[in-house]
Length: 78
Image (cartoon, rainbow, N blue to C red; front, top):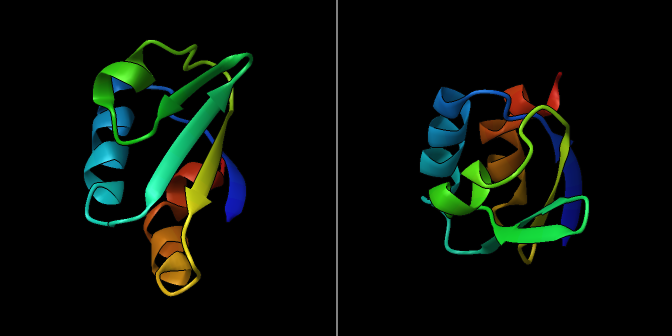
């Protein structure tokens, strides 16, 4: 498991992010304050406060982790 901070401060970024991580078979969870949602859920993500950084937990055994982090790197650099 890996946890990183990301910022998805627009609807377009949320849509692109969901499209990118949906290609992977592992689970992704987002924490925002006291809320937890499936990161692959567009509706779930849009229910969160997108003005603040979010905590992304990636449930991967390490085989795809480097590829995932490369794919979402732009959301980690805010």
